[in-house]
Length: 102
Image (cartoon, rainbow, N blue to C red; front, top):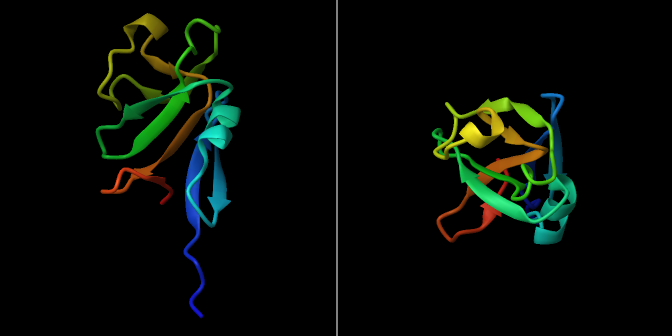
């Protein structure tokens, strides 16, 4: 019986360090909300990767995440000093719309 392929997501914290999240199946909405500390918002990177961030990061006063700047994403980040705010989850979106790891 073949082993299920592991999915690896990256959780980028506001200290700029990444932490691998390894799962056997796609990460749940509830887990993503727990990791970013609130409701999620999808952000596309120019390299084709997908990020999920706290959609209220600015209102909650979350710290800038130094790993991503406005040069990396397709959204305007001038309101946050050119950075995404708070913890960020990175992965890929499959053709069926499922958020999967690398």
